[in-house]
Image 1 (cartoon, rainbow, N blue to C red):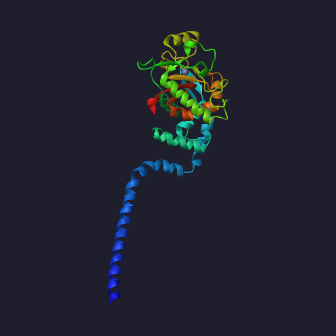
Image 2 (cartoon, rainbow, N blue to C red):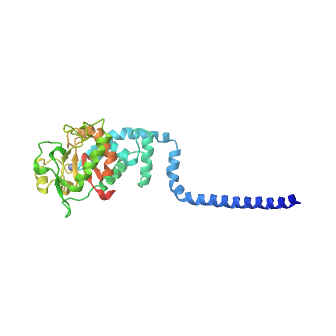
Image 3 (cartoon, protein in one colour):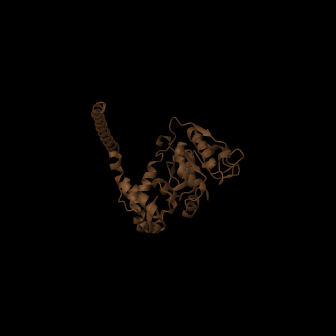
Length: 303
Ligand SMILES: [Zn+2]
């Protein structure tokens, strides 16, 4: 008698559980589908690319190995050859840590090309290079002259590359100086095996890397510089220099401090100091002028 009552009620509750489970499971499935629907559609292209063997990009890689030393392009009124000098910047921009001759580099480049409305060839041709330079230039200050709220500050001569620099050439904008000091503190921590440091972890007095080569330049001083080097070219000594904002710094990254010769820039872009700046300066509000490895501009609004 007991069993006869128990059995149907057990069956009913079992059935109830089953229905509830199916309902919940169903809701769960739909909820999950709802949740991933958006991103999964957006990611389809890049996911497919990652799944595609990167060896599909081996012919693009060999084309890049050729172009990095030979691509002819124009900048600042001068014919330029190859893009070797810009490899650290390019690699940082496309988010890859692989050789520019590798299929992995070409694969990452193809993703960047897609995201920037270019044909996803994985080949760094002149169209792609000019898209890179436009992007980097768009991250810069884009102005000259002192803004009304800019406060200039004289930094200690010890912060400068040249210990005999004239006292009237040590100025830079207040916030730029604070950000520079923070950046150098982080750099010395990360590069403690590469730089000469004091016992308290600061740049040693004899260490030249990461020192300020040039900071604020008055329009008068800039005009005098241009007179001294009339053939420096458009890219080298601009009439409306970002240095007149007090937000631009030339930082020592190796070689001749501010010489645009390809051979000199090639030395600079391989130093630990430059490579560190490429990867980290933006965290402190500094953005590069791609053509001059030493030139960095403080644009905190970019963050
Ligand atoms: Zn500069």
